[in-house]
Length: 277
Image 1: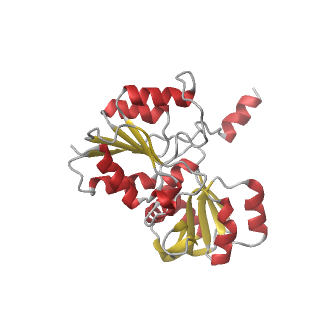
Image 2: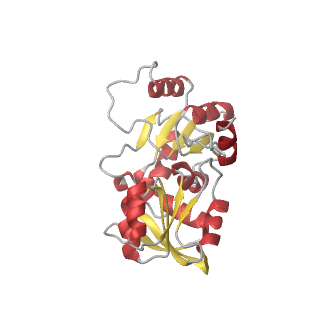
Image 3: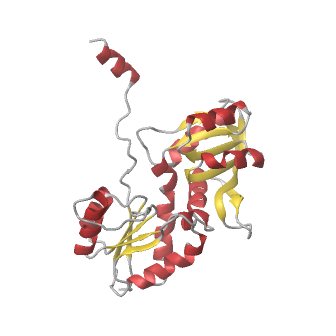
């Protein structure tokens, strides 16, 4: 079995920590680099459900996209939600490693995985760094043009189902060929998508006013996803990094547990009927 340090080396080769934003918290959260690893769980969110899953499969390492401790803390007491997870992980001998904005900017990274899932051929970053290869978001092309209505269906079919679903903003008959994508919250890149001249922009957590102003300016059609769904394809990419690292025979599992906070979607017909009873 390889050591945890070997797993970390593979991850940091693929997702260099130096690519992380200055405000981010990436790397090893807990765990002994000298300990051996034979089973890994890859997920988007290090939360109770995925920690439970790691225990169930007998994992010694969780690789998560989102940090557990993004903001500075002075302690991790077990009577707080995040402290409770840290204590469980340490007591259970499970390491936690987080690759966040370094995985967003890496090439390939989070947005490459999203583009691949949708069926795009990536051509360049949406918001590139000086090297022109790394950076946030990606721009790509569909194999063939298709109406926006069909493109929204394509995106929905490519990603895991969530209760909020997939939303589209634009003319259903608009022809889509070039597409910008950004895994995670991406309305800060609306202007970049418009400047790139793409036909559609796919991202998560689009807010009402920025999206509305973007539409009024006749920018690209918008496809809105949940945060978890937009970043989940990265789990498969990260699992391949570990499997192909040459660090030994390691079982890598991708969590399919939806960890979006939204768990119920009201049916308009049901809600209306119940309100009038």
